[in-house]
Length: 214
Ligand code: DX5
Ligand code: ZN
Image (tube, rainbow, N blue to C red; front, side, top):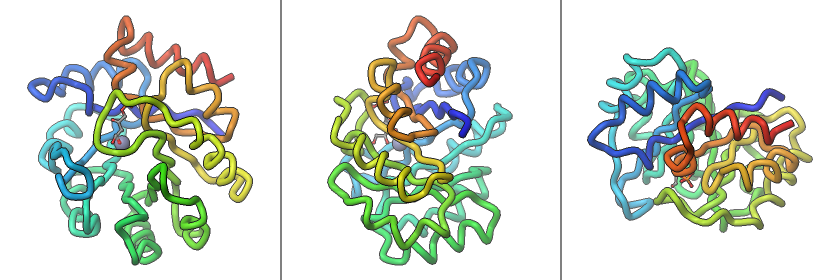
């Protein structure tokens, strides 16, 4: 399956998201990954659907909302109306995850289900037939720039074994030193935030990540 690079804006200066997002698109990004945090599911608070609407009007590539929120279903309307084409919610806060995936798909939105490092891939088993993407968190959610959690590689491999055709996204600590192991384990979609802010340029950073996935 084709490798997709999904830059996160979490490590960008909140005073100026537009410039880096335009550079991400110009640098060949496939999705823009919006890390939505409510201060409840995770301690920080980031931004809402208005930012998605504003940024979405400036780029052609699709936006995805990674809802690190309680009651993610309460935010579906706002992010869908803002133009997001994929919504990723956490299994840990979705007892009706199966129905939420059905709802998103019924509205023409890709359904992503995320699991934290401490959550077993077993929770995804009943959802494989109704989701478009599994997100394996490779750091504990809430912050950018954290250390990659090696043990998550096994989770990626387990999902790949169970579902050879499912897109598997990984999120947290993805950089040129970690992406090859993730890709070989079966990941296809790579969220990266702080690495791109450290790279010589956003486009060079994206190119470097793609070069590792061959
Ligand atoms: C963390 C977010 C990630 C984060 C990745 O809760 O879900 O998307 O922005 O950042 P890096 O790539 O810096 O680990
Ligand atoms: Zn994220």
